[in-house]
Image (cartoon, rainbow, N blue to C red; front, top):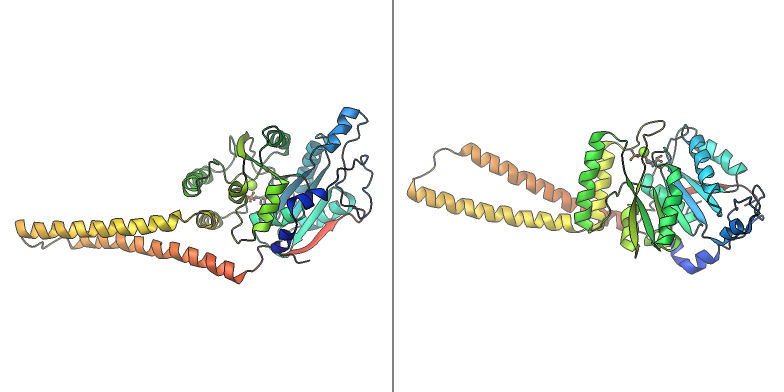
Length: 365
Ligand code: UDP
Ligand code: MG
């Protein structure tokens, strides 16, 4: 199945939330065939518990790329946490072109568990496009995102939802405390977060943390955006009226290794900086002006020096050094301009950010 994000624009937020009437279904009972209700989770006959069924429904979106060893543990921990919320919930796993057994395991899970949808992408598109694909099918009033490698503990989800609702926020981000990543990665993250804060004027401290909760309206606006830049936390920040950030725990990756190489991270950083701000190109222009003014000042200095001391016989290598610095700035400037031209090219080409091949769900949904 192929879906353009554009098609989502036709659904207004109110229409979409209207699709979700919060019908309480006994635990393990299947929802009505063909109905769009999420399966409810509570087994309680306690009226105060049951009244929670009218509370906002929750969808959890998880991007998955070769995570077969992590999935069984992740799903067990996730469903334990979500069951205790006393709300209607679903988990949307997005298989981002995995080449291991992840998709097969997820398909089997979706066949027996009505609270699970599995979105199969046609190839590997990347973590952020995968989350976007998940957003396009998630139906909860609150949508939570989380990594599949258990670096974001699912046990933090209730805290995010509570903050979202009590503070009436549109977005609540996680701020990873006590990070379990290599120090080079942590240093790079700090640098990127500072640059991003300056470039896009975003107050977020941790743009890389995917443990976040969004209100349905923001999710629909993100899906409707239909632009190539898909850095979800920054996009949400730009669209949300009220957002906040709370500290969340962070763990070491359970199995496997990070799917991001240094090159991928650099690309993502460039995408973030040039996708949300014109500051880089303005800085380049400013640097050009400063270098030109420096050149004029240096020329005046050499001229005055020649009048006072006489012609300069040496200094050839100094000139080389200055030349290399200017050349470096020039090449960097061309690169930055190229980045923006590349963005225009991608927008003009209008290839979809992701392609959904199939959505797997239990027949009785
Ligand atoms: N991921 C994905 N597509 C990709 C790369 C990663 O869906 O091309 C998923 C991955 O399976 C995981 C999450 O995105 O659930 C975060 O990836 P990873 O743990 O490798 O990133 P890191 O924690 O090193 O930033
Ligand atoms: Mg990870």
